[in-house]
Length: 253
Ligand SMILES: [Zn+2]
Image (cartoon, rainbow, N blue to C red; front, side):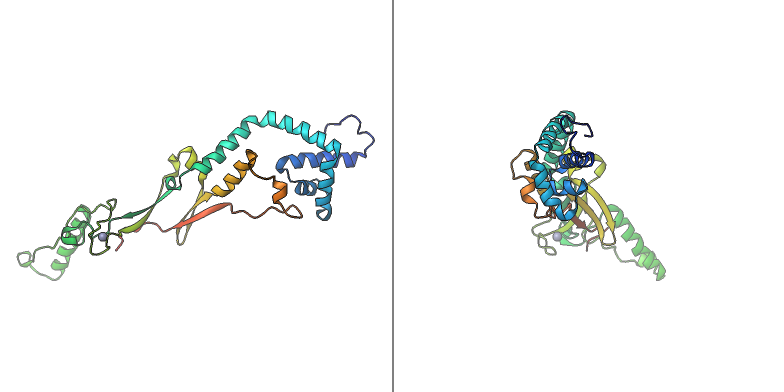
């Protein structure tokens, strides 16, 4: 960008340098006001300087020339960015975290009584026996152990519509996915995870923002210029959506 162009020798080197700097900055985000500020113009005059520079024939020639070079050099990158945005737009958030409603402890138990897994049943029976032994009750006097709803609890089963305890609503459980094995779309949507005192926060990039950027890439929407207000301030857009979740508890009653 620092290359000298013929016919500009008359311009003061500093002014020329600043114009070239303006062009370099303008090509980054196509925001004339912000480019003017970054090129060293005062914030107060940046808006009018930006407008003036964009009308300057030499500036326009430089922009056109640089854009063509840039397009040539960045063609692959442009495609990759477009593909990345398309991935964010089409990604299914369920690939990052599922919010499921599953059976409660009573849904599938015998007579809709409390149901356990086999290991839970062994533990319950041992606790029961230890309680009786602690009371010095001889085994021959022990009553029969009550298995309640029996074994076979599987939290992945669907709720039972007939369940008198949850009335078929089941229990809600969030399932964050293993982020090491995400597909390209889900990986593009994924913006990290935060462990907080209230549980996990699965962060996702904004689909709305991706749609906006993709639309701009395709020239579907108005230019950024028209979106930015006086002073070239960008409209605030959320960086990502935060989906707070509680870690699943071992038992949900
Ligand atoms: Zn139930």
